[in-house]
Length: 440
Length: 112
Image (cartoon, rainbow over all chains, first blue to last red; front, side, top):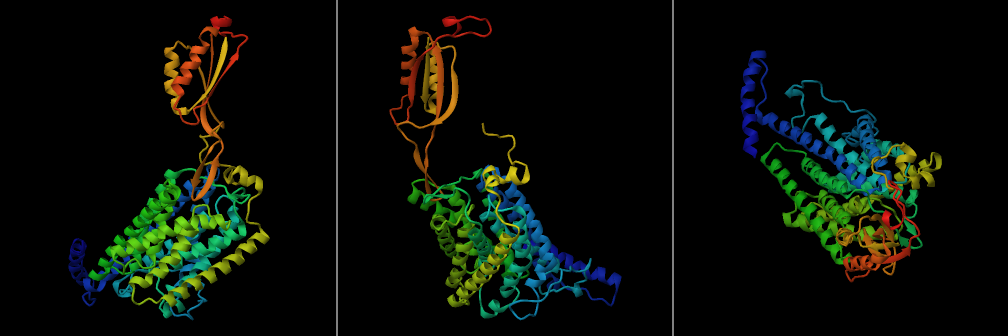
């Protein structure tokens, strides 16, 4: 694998001096040793970035499959809208808030849009110890979109479109970048030694906390909890939900693998491979545990729980996908799968209506994954991990709660009873997802 | 003439249709229905929450036959549709006053 990539690159590097001499004899062309790591890491960001981009499709399909047919068009609309808004907000303020360089460690007053390198950058002007700014921006942007997708799934089938999108603007432009800077922007938690490799806490729990605050303020869907009973509302299309889960699983290789943030040495690229294998193992273990547990507890396998279990396995390994052995990834992911099977009915007991199971998957398994770092990463301490979990939880829950309250008090966040019963597709959009299949 | 109304398990429909055709039945009306009887629905679990399925899917057959063969047809249906398990269905027999074949205007047993 390494050789296959390095031979053509070395050949190209060998040719470079000839070109340079022809242009300017005084200019010394960089050797491959100098630019190779930059090229490889940039490539890692680009490949990782478009894998994580594809997760947006995964979230869209998962959510479209788990909501009822009358709300599918709205759910798809929210998904493409939130991704697009996240893309713009992260350029406008998010990226530079999250990666401000030197700052006080808590909040950077760095409200400037992202600027890319000039066209045809010379090697001498590149940050050769890392990667291109454009590839870094592109890669990091995909993560904030994942956070926003988590919120849309939890609040599905009852939240108004525009207030939700306003929340997404603030979440992706301000909330997520601020808390993200604490860890990935070399802020106070990073200083303290908090460890969250690809974002069990920074990305997934943050989405989960924002969604939890929203679910509490928004309330459950009409008829979901009646006379002390939970009234299930089965999803419209489990084929789409399964496709979405597989897409997310695939995208996760970029999510975790790209978070190595370096690919220019034998050690780094080998680590990326290790991360891919561990990520896959955790997903598989989460799915198998959910498969077994639902059979044992309910006497029948519940596919929707198996899908959630797989995703919980992925979230669990995201905080430390590198250090564990394959066996480590297996049991860490497996516990994630178990968390989901117990947490879904637990949330129902509390009358917190989470349409797609995103709170168990992203918040609970995210917390578990962040704690599990200490088992294989000797540099992490339990106290620091807990500090990080609490800090992200308190900040995101409080600021999200305040914003949800403001939206509720001003424009209102919930559709009318009639619209909710009719379905948001016809009530809010006047457009059905499956117009040809009317039930007689 | 008699109207036979039978509710049966959906998976038995093909078998019952074949048996009735063999017995000489020339026409049959079929409707997909939901309902409850002695079975009174059953429980399912979705994402950890138990819920009751109050109405069970069934197929309703309606056929009009001559008085002379009514008992035979009822027997054909009940024999073919029977599994011995709960939810096999019910058969009702009603008198029919008149029948008309729209194309020809024939009436009574000639029309069926």
